[in-house]
Length: 107
Image (tube, rainbow, N blue to C red):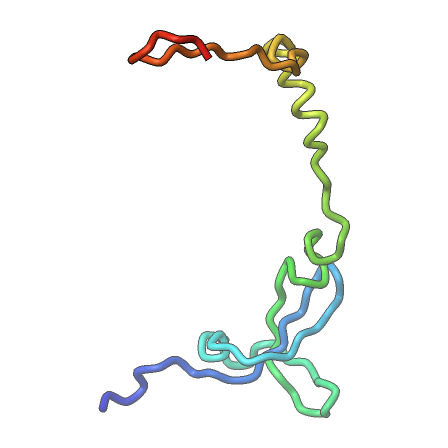
């Protein structure tokens, strides 16, 4: 079997710069870090390499609830204003008359 076929996999701390949150997890990025890379002392007293990220679940608007809600009703009304409200105002259905081919009788 070929040696060193898989990248190094080990513990690393990801630091969200915008929220100041720290996450300890395992990653293959450990093998790509330069020797002497920045480290942080975790709660257990051990030193782990730290990688700074711009966005995480602590700062992303979807996970924090600070996301923007789209007004779908306003978009429909804008469509109706732009293309006319002839179809929007007619809520009554017209009766449909059909003839049967064999008898020619209307139903």
